[in-house]
Length: 302
Ligand code: RIB
Image (cartoon, rainbow, N blue to C red; front, side, top):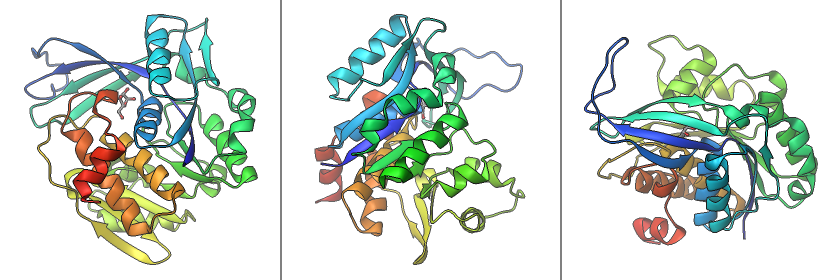
């Protein structure tokens, strides 16, 4: 069984479906709000558990109803929650999400307790890194915490996947600790400050030139690009009826982590991840949309 450590954020998503994403200064009327478990780290942890991995989630939630609800969800999913700290000083993370008629979204995150997930929290969980195949992190928590997690991953021989979402400047140290980076197109643009005309292929090459051994650039309905020692390959997305793209990247990253831990061939790894992402887009919400292993394999005809 793949052993995955996810270090990252947990949020409660307050989601409103809207006819279109509002412009600056504009008020628009949407549908009734729904409250959905989310947060990039938590979504990836839940997806990895549903896809059949043994998952430890290192995180921080507030001592409030959002935090309690999240913890109880993680336990129901069979996730190891021993290293989730309940923080009395600050509220749980939350996200305000507008989803338009095409299933595209705009998200504002209020980090709350996620901003206080410190390197010490990772150190407390050191024993789980000794068994990890893959350590997976995103950027809704402090960068030094991600760095500490990847240092422990290196120390114990686990592979590291950095989902640089939301994008922000990354230190040389963190880049050197990253085996696979998985930006979407916008994040890649922001990470390298690309000129507007830069193509996804050019951006992938520029990230690769920073010394990251594998770059996976996700392209939403256009699929994904894989750039590694064997060269650049494009993988089309699986065509689906798009309802809500929230957390599609999270499903992709979790599936990537598992496929890698299970030793799948690089091409199968990306097909597996594309299928998980595709399924998540067919359903509303973040964690509720994360697919199971059986669903992904059925879609792929495996
Ligand atoms: O990737 C989707 C997630 O981004 C949402 O669940 C929201 O909480 C934000 O973290």
